[in-house]
Image 1 (tube, helix red, strand yellow):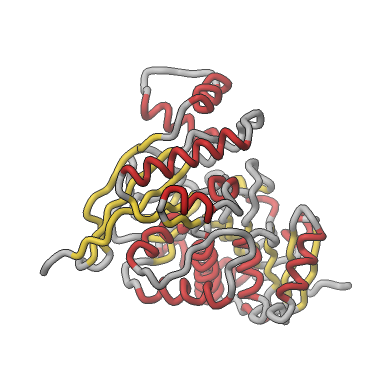
Image 2 (cartoon, one colour):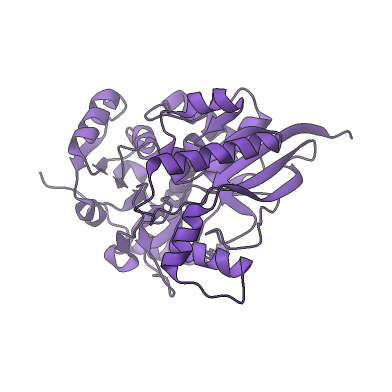
Length: 372
């Protein structure tokens, strides 16, 4: 059978937090120890560069592609770095992507936030297609929540979903999708005004009971399913903050929920927006994932766009319509080797562990009724 070569995709990324960055430096310089302030300053001065590449990747043994992992030397902890400097680094990363022959560039983590509203300009400048990957990330979150509810015996139609960071692109997409499928949603954001604007724009889809709030702790205590999709660069909660029976999808990078071993057995916390693959994407160092056979949905969207020209790109804010979301939800179902990965930190849940959670979640599930 002849191979069909579809081209190359660039994964444009940065370390999600200081711990991952320290691990990366240890990988590069195993015999050296550096002060954190020095590490941050050196990283700030470093231009973007290619880390590694993967050749002849395929889902089906028919269509093949290459992928390039490109580092934008940036960390959310860099409080003194200018926005202009970060944009310059992303601009350089896009130039490297084109030099590598990439047709699509997928922006990971904060790179998509920084470039928000400027994607079309940079796509034209570099003659490359750019995506934030938010549509596939939202689709992956939605499918994971549905699967958890189904496997754990949780009735979505009688559940309260709390979405922390609901005014963002991914959070608002999840809220729109679940708006006619659950009993109630508690939507939070830093700005009550942004939530009210979202509600006015999408109220035709929001047919369940809706509560808008800036109080994240209130949502955590009064929801039996919680989705974290914020741009916070520090943890907001830990695993002891949740009541028994809660399903917690933490899709933020860096993650919003601090977890440590042993994990609670009556609260299911997992890293949302992560998809499983039939091939390895292993750069050789820790990138915040439990398995080399899993990767971030935002960057897998770049692969899907390379393979299927009919799929829409994700960029801007509030541009993920229900129709666009449905395309990606269907795409997940049609690629047999693309699945939902359930993991937290470096721990990938086994089928046996998930079965135990099924018993504990079912026994402890809380169906919340909010008194107005």
